[in-house]
Length: 387
Image: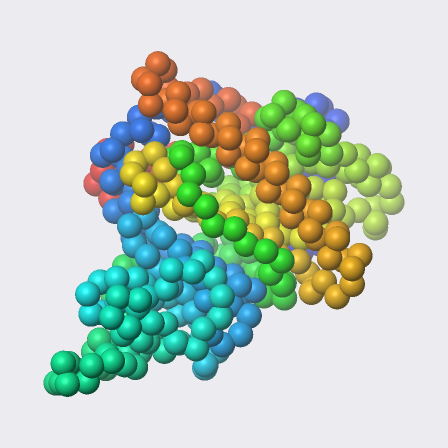
């Protein structure tokens, strides 16, 4: 962010800390439990939010050179994202044009070609069909028309975005809006390096995964023995950008920094900036690195999700000390998210399935959480679906 915006944020956070309060929504919001459990609701989200909206599917750091790839499961749609020999990142439907098997089962790596294990049809880094193995058996087949199906793709601000609908129009500028795009651009993700990435199936609705990151109310309780002590509890600033938002948590070091000389005041590393990239991505500036989580409806049925998490560092680790530092941060991230946040979300999902409670109460102090769910409801209604 520019210097003026940064000083405005510091002033806002300092005021909240001084008043021992946080950004507030106008009123408590009551979210139906069915939002997490209703099969019709899940089907609507898959059909609208995960087909018609631009989604971050990888970062440039995950595709560091020609042939570097990741695979993602966007609901029922398997996607292969690969950097071609021409340097272009492409999102391809990870489905062989012969008999419909996937052509790549690995979560990430580097390959020259992608070969289906069923009958060995192979494709190059741009998705073009290179071999059907049995030439006589497929004599007359138009190879040029039988490459992997390509999805609309754009690499911008260090992120690879896709529209998970073949032939659709990817209008990233309209989706982000000028102000939020500037916010993302200022993170300069294109200059970062991938430390590590995990992909996992989780037994809770994809929105539970997003919910985890949208309030700091729980830090002093759920994370009281891990990361909670590093933050000022239940204090955060909120800025909405249409469907997207930024939520700024306050670290303990903030107070001393804000009391110091005006020309030395800085947001980093005294605040963690959490961005919601609607509908499914959390992008967090965390002291000296960036963390990203992407959540997709799961293939294991309603009430499950696929979670992709990664950590980006500002430069490659070239010393043992640097490697220890980043590995320690990575382990803290995974231990906190998996053992505390995700374990809690699993229990939440299980409890909601019982029907014991009909709704959840999102407090005024959970303004970012409210904003996210309001956006989901609004977009489904805008597409003719009443959730």
